[in-house]
Structure formats: C-alpha cells, structure tokens
Image 1 (cartoon, rainbow, N blue to C red):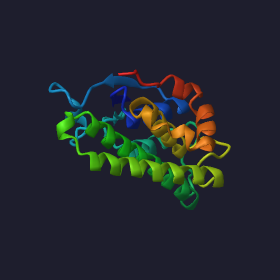
Image 2 (image 1 turned 45 degrees about the horizontal axis):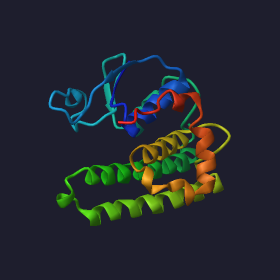
Image 3 (image 1 turned 135 degrees about the vertical axis):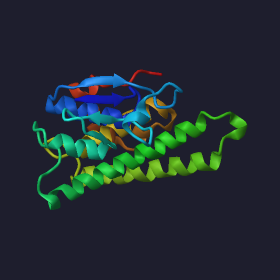
Length: 202
C-alpha cells in the first residue's frame, strides 16, 4: 500500500495512526497539495490528502472511507462491526472531523493578508470549534462512541483534531476550558501511534 500525505494534515495523521495501530505496512509518499508541482490530484480529483493506493491498485480517498477500507485488512477493530454499535462511534468521528474542518478554515483565513481577512468568518469557525469541543467532552463523559476501553476511530479522529488545535491554533487554549477532555487527550496523545505521527512545527 501507498499513503499520500502531508505531514501536517490532521486527516492524513488520522490514517497514519490507524495504520500504526493495526501494524499494517505501507509506503508513505509526502506531497503538498497546494504547491504547483503536486501530484495529489492524480490520486484524488479533489486535490486533498490523504489518498491510499491499495495493493490491487484501487485508490481510496477521504479519511472516513480509507479507515473503513483498512478495517477489511485486519488488526484491532476500530469500527464496531455491528452497524447500530458503530453509529455512536461514527458520529463522534464526524464531530471530531468537523472540529478539524473548522480549525483548518480558521487557520487558512488567518494566513491571508490582514486587510483581506474575513474576521467574521474566523469567528464563525471558532464558534464551531467551541460548540464542537463542548459536545465532544459531553460525549466523552457519557462514553457515547468515545473513550471506551478499546481504541476506536472516533478516539483517533478526536486526538488528531485536538493535536491540530495545538499545532495551528495554540492561542485558542482549549485545555483551559475542557479539563476532562484535556486529561483524556494527554493519555491518548502519548500512545506510540500518536507520538510517531506528531506533525512538524511548520
């Protein structure tokens, strides 16, 4: 298998963690989607990472789809096989991915020249993150698809979302407002699969 990634992409990190937890061998190809010479659109017409090239040549993209495919290859179960049992996990995953979406949007808007920045849009994204974190912490406390005794795709998505906030929106200081989530994340992010996929600072 080959995984096409950017090392700072939280979505790519999510799949890298899945591969590490499942101990599945793969070749990693680093490609930056926004540089002129990128080859990412050769794998994903949307020009986004991650993209996975399976051993049979089939290309899979979008992290939830890739995670679903990787479940077919064995290793520890990260998505419950029972569909009803899987629903809370997939919803917590979607919530974590949505927090990531908002964080990416806020970060990219903040990188535009100051006179061109849409501050109202940044605020909208930050509000999404605030609401999302409150909901994520509530789901953690209720063990609603998150924080069970066995690691799930929702835990991985949440860890990657929180790690991205640390990387790109450190001034947001989410830990001070969500102490239960922070305590849980500290243990989660100390797992070897997360430590080995820690993004570079830039």
